Image 1 (cartoon, helix red, strand yellow):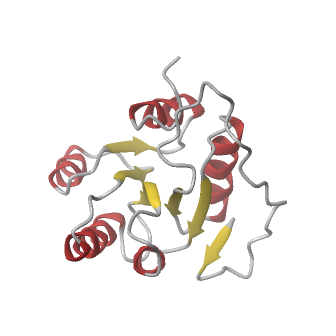
Image 2 (cartoon, one colour):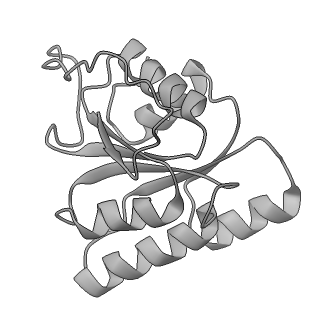
Image 3 (cartoon, helix red, strand yellow):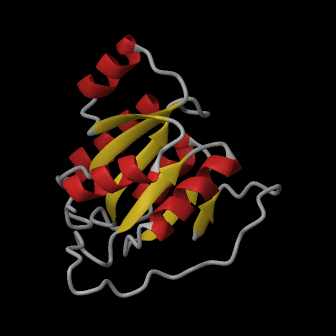
Length: 161
């Protein structure tokens, strides 16, 4: 797990490298990663554990705020991320972050990866704004394994059950 903008209170658990997928898995591209931006340590750990539990064969990059997410994209190859998951209520909120990340992909003339906004607060206006920004999905926290599986199946990261 890579950490940008490291939070000194974060107790990093043992890092588990992605295993090679079993033959039935259909990864987007094994060299790709999932970017998760959330200012709460618990959420980062929970989502990472859900990804590991589903045996999703992509490496996870965790950051603590929106600007760190923008920096992670800017410092990467523009094809690095298969999925970007952004907390709505974090410093440099999820929609501001998405706007900045979309601009980087536009400048690079590279297709934008699928993006999911995570929020503990569901509001129809916020959902409309997220959809208007091109968000693939708007997920109410906590993110369940079932919902994560559905998102990853839609992206062909894992096969449909």
